[in-house]
Structure formats: C-alpha cells, structure tokens
Length: 441
Image (cartoon, rainbow, N blue to C red):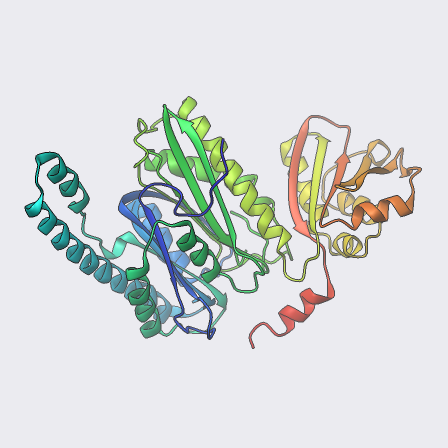
C-alpha cells in the first residue's frame, strides 16, 4: 500500500477546482468542486442529528435513490442548515447551475476533439481522440452538494452559481488543484486535510484520494465534518456502500473534539471504475483489499480532524484493550476521549489518572477498577500511571515530559477479554472558548 501522493485527484479521471465566491468570507477560497470524467457509483454516510441541513437531505436522495453521481460542489462559510424550503431550493439551483455549466463545457470540448478527429492522420489516432470525445450528459441528480459554516443563514444562490462558473474552467487533475479544493472547504480549520493511497487489486493499481474538513462541532455518529473520497476502483454500488459504512464505524465515529454532533456531517465516496480492475461485486479478496485501503485513508483523515480540533495543541488518542468485547471497548474509549476534565488535564500536561479512571467508571460498562492498568505514551516515552487500584510508582516529571508532545496516547488495559478500540480527540484549551464565542461574527 503506497501513500506517496495525495488528494482527490490521485485516482484516474478525477479533477478538482476552487474559487473565491464571496459567500461569507472575503478574499479567500470558499468553494470547491470535484468532477469525474465518467459517471461514478456513489456511497455516503450522514449525520444522525435530527436537524439535518438541506445538503444532507439532497445528498441522501442521490445516494439512496439514484446511486450514481458525477460531481460534488461544496461551499464554506454558510451551512445551509435550518433554512427550510429556501435551503432545499438552493441545493436544486446549485445542482442545476453545475449540470448546465458542465454540459456546456463538455460540448465545447467535444467540438474541439471532433475537429481533431477530422484532422487525424491515421485510424489509431482517431480512435484515441474519439474515446476522449465520448461524454455522458450531466443531470441535476448527478450533482452532490455540501455546505459548512454558520447555521441558519441563507446562501446567496447567485454567488454559488457564479462560483460554479469560475471553477469549471479551472478543473484539473493536478495535485495542486486537489490542494486548493481542500483549502476551500475549511472554516475554523488551521490546515487542509488530504490523503492518497494506491493499492493493487486484481492486478491493477487502484487509487483512493480524500480530503476532509472538521475542527469544531465534532462528535459524529455515522462533525461540522465533511469528507470527500474518490477512487478509480471498479466496484458495485452495493459493495461501495457496504465498505464505507463498515470503515466509518472505526474511523470518523471514533473522533470527538467537543461532543457536538453537527447538522451537516457528510462522507461521500465516488468510484468511477477507471482503474480497470474486475468489478468488485462480492466480499472476496479484492473487496477485503479495497476495504483495508479505504479504512487506512479514513483513519488518517480522522486523526487529522482530531489533531486540528479548535484551539487544540495536542492530538489525544485513547486506546482501550482487554475489554469484555468490542462494543464495551468502544464505549470506554469514547468516554475518556470526550471527558472535558481529561482533555483539560492533557492541555495542562498533568498526568491526572483520576480523570481517566472517572471517565471509564461512568461509561456504563462493568469492570473491576483493581484490574485496570493505565499508561501514557508519546514520542518522549511511556509511563505506567495506574495499577492494582491506585497510582503506580512513576515520575511526575517524566509524565509531564510525555504529555508535552503534540501527539499523546492514553492506554487502558481492562483485563476482561479481547475487546479493543481506539478513539481520537484533542486537548481542551482557552482558545476553544474564544473561537466559539465569536463564531458567528
């Protein structure tokens, strides 16, 4: 498995672009587009919040009722959530504008390619050009939409349409285009988040690219969290959805920054089949290889979200092992990673094992505290801080040094069984309050 390249344009046939549409922000990129040369199978997972943003409802229709898509357009700054029928109309008009503009661009390109056909000297050149000129018309139902930002504000549709018009001429398969698109979907994020993986499936090189945004209002049950994934794997829509639903459980669903589940959480996965592998239609070795690669790319993106939590100075990872079963381990890990007191202790570089034991204790899972062992580990070393029902013999100075690194892990061994789970979060800082106190302004 290779990860030497990155971004949503890594797989064959995908292009990306970004634009400054001025939807809320000024003088910064705030719209992104991902586009496939050919139709894609599409899968998605969405927020469990009962208040679902208009783009979530739009995309659920495409994923569940259509199963195919061609493009994603996303804006940052305004979430298009709690916006009623006007918000749904915005999604429809945005998709209509994108479909119309893409078809116009494809028709113009086809004319150029047809002219090149006429000038082709030999049949081989002509065949290649004819292949390039083939284009399936883009419909409104081929366009997925996503938004992130302030809840309750209406999006100016004219600016969305103008942004689409700016992006289509810029669509490109370059890594730079993917990077600009990743920048454009940021809100309070401090860095763009991208990953790319290549793996051999059925004797073919299959690529998976991804970008996401998320920094605050992160506590998914599938944050404000958006993730867009592309692959050139040939795979049925049923298997694509099965794979995505499976890997989300142990990746994005194990992230928490502040315990708030957003109205806009969306993960979309598009597969255009251009890698040329035999189509994956069942749970065979090719499917397992695809799932392993998909898990890894989403694990990396999930960690990037956690480490960039609003105001964060450290990624806080919690590993629970030896739990009675997997479900118990998940509950225990989430309880610790979401504990405000534990997160504050991580920020203060304080090895306060009492915070961790308390969070384990109120998780609702039965265990014997006298059997639990706790460790803290980072690039600065590892120290056991709790055993046999009380504090272990450790150096506070050493523990503080370990907790001063940008990535810190707490390990809890419950000594009950073989259940394991890992959750990701971040420390809780003064800056988190400052960011969210001023968010709407």
